[in-house]
Length: 156
Image 1 (spheres, helix red, strand yellow):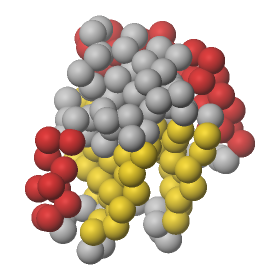
Image 2 (cartoon, one colour):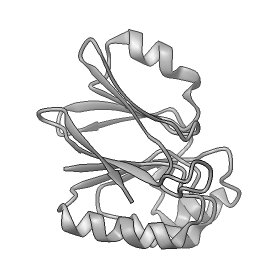
Image 3 (tube, rainbow, N blue to C red):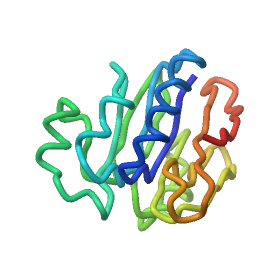
Image 4 (cartoon, rainbow, N blue to C red):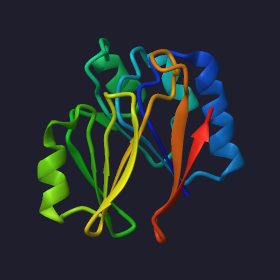
């Protein structure tokens, strides 16, 4: 199982809940689509298989990078994991190109704070909304079973 989240915006209360979700669902990989904000939130999300991109509100990029063992990168960021091709980004500037390219099994993005799950040909596109709940009042994340492409939206 994979966990996809975005826009945590330093909400430690929700981050502690996410840490419990990682344990409860035996999450193998965590994908964070940006806007961590400060490095002190990272320990709640870091796993051996952690992938992240910087968001427009991430101010301390050097320390975020160092504290994540350089696993947070500028997006869009292409990952191959278990033979799946994944594109992860914060702002959806490359979304249409990625969606229409048919190069990816999964495209994950954030920034808009709006939930989205849609399939385009063989690509599953996910925006997990915001894990902080600051903007919309709803803190959400996605759990994904990559082999079947089945997912569940979690309210945090």
